[in-house]
Image (cartoon, rainbow, N blue to C red; front, side, top):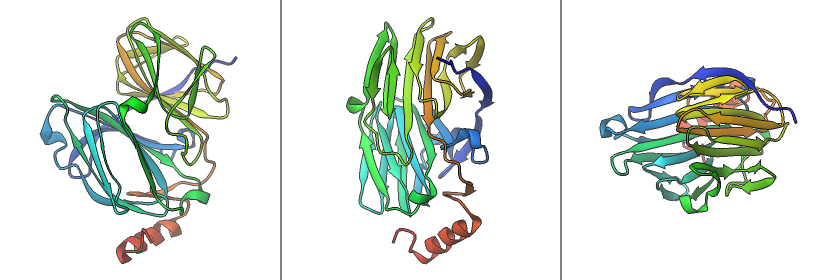
Length: 280
């Protein structure tokens, strides 16, 4: 089995979005090696002023979003009448498809807020389908203890570890993906199989890891080489997101909340939003 090594490391950078919400961001809109993922935002704060404005009503077209909360709540409302409130450890998935208008409001839990929003591209054949939404509270996220203080949580897709396939509750993304959260004490190991046709990356949100003799630390995105296996060691008490998915070999054109394949399609999305027909 070919083990995936580290291809490159990209540092997240401070940014803001919505009504002044402070985030750490990693994006790859112009990077084919990032596909099918487009962006990862990390929200982490113990200060309400960093996020109190939230994300007021705004549109999307052509993408999916996956929000995952380690600590804190996240309220969602959209034009379809969907409402949801994530709690600690929960996730929510939205496919904007042709168009959605929604709002999102983060809230602390026990004085802490820590979560992520991941943008996932949609292939051209699915960009104009009707919008969808599902939430998954913590109790339905698939978990497996790999040892003492060594836990894997699978949110989307399937992950095989030591011959045991763990199936996450989210199975209907636009292209096949696997998204998981690994939390481990120093010295713990994770050895897993990944679909060799998938591109894969890791976002380290706590601690440090070693893969094939190379290290990465909190706040870094690790782009992995091609292969079938992943073997890593936690050098400290560590948490990371594993993101793996089938790449979409199509042109990406990004403008604000819209991700399409051509500039003409972006301009049509803007016209539709201005005319109030984005979600029709």
